Image: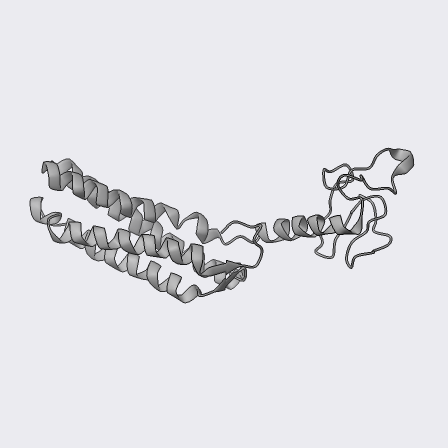
Length: 206
């Protein structure tokens, strides 16, 4: 890698290529962001990519996205698993309500159990993210999102207790109602995440 020499923009070396930023990340000399024409002309940037200081904004964005992508909260990878299980439990509850096949009631019970298990794992991962500072990219109204997800787990826990009953009463009517309410809260949680929580870098997906 080339050593930074001069810096028309704070934290960057634009003599030939952007080699190192103030964020501590390096860009390969022959990368798409900063391509050198030939060995004899290494101090000139590709006119289509990094030909002027204005194009440095693209480099800044790349570096910020790369930096914060490495700090993406780990619990966000686990949260979809219980959500899918709880939505699946509603589907199997409806199937049992229409067919009275015990297979569907058993499937609902298993989906709720798996969803609760991964929900607890996601809580532990969120706590680790909080201590590790990985939640710093989330800004805005975070507490409604946290409370909504907590209510989803509480409702699913009571729903699992209802599904532990025998035969018809394990689903109809209370189990089916709890599954519907849980899915409504899941949709509301998704809306909160999409509309109310801002991320420090829009280039990084939540």
